Length: 101
Image 1: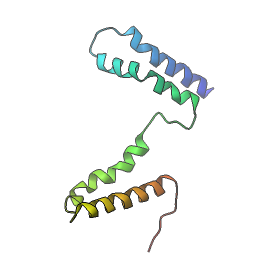
Image 2 (image 1 turned 180 degrees about the horizontal axis):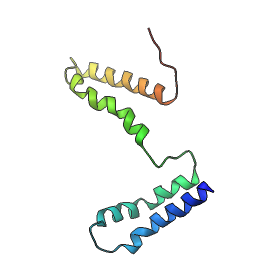
Image 3 (image 1 turned 90 degrees about the horizontal axis):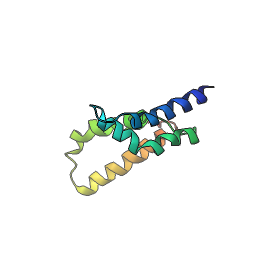
């Protein structure tokens, strides 16, 4: 039942741009129209999410750490930091337990 309601809502949203010609919301209309197929992917695979909040939240430490990383001694050190950070974030995303020392 929930999926039926969502199906109807997504199709209504996908048709909405066709009914909007002109007006202040043109950019939003164009955005939805250009991404209609991607939006409908959610209905095909339940593993897909309509939100990318978990991904955005995982990138927050990168944004906060930029100021600290300005002072890497070398390009190689910066590259090593990126590799380690990527491995840690991938482990978190896949549910690996945190290692404490």
